[in-house]
Length: 145
Image (cartoon, rainbow, N blue to C red):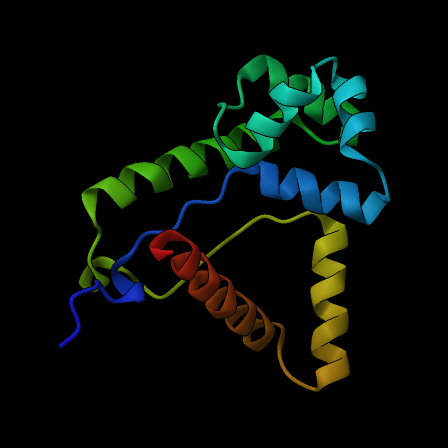
């Protein structure tokens, strides 16, 4: 008898820090360089990346300037994260999910996914579904210890 809720019933929320980390990796830059570039202590950046600290409008401006992107992009990621946290609390059911997902990712990440899809001879959608499924499974394992 299964007592845990199915994965498909658990809303997932990813902090903007995941995109920051991916972008830093793509640019081969360290978190220390990023922290210095936006004028924050390393501890504050760590809290931002993990989602423990919210991404404010002022930080969105600084991050946008650091990466050469718009502040609106970062504000949008934060809004999606906060919305995801709220949905997680509300326990959105599978019946209300459409099965469609529109996301914005850094161009470098998009290019990497396209490369994987081409190399594996599958669609980008198939690659993303596999990656998301694996990530959700690992995330649930971490949560459930």
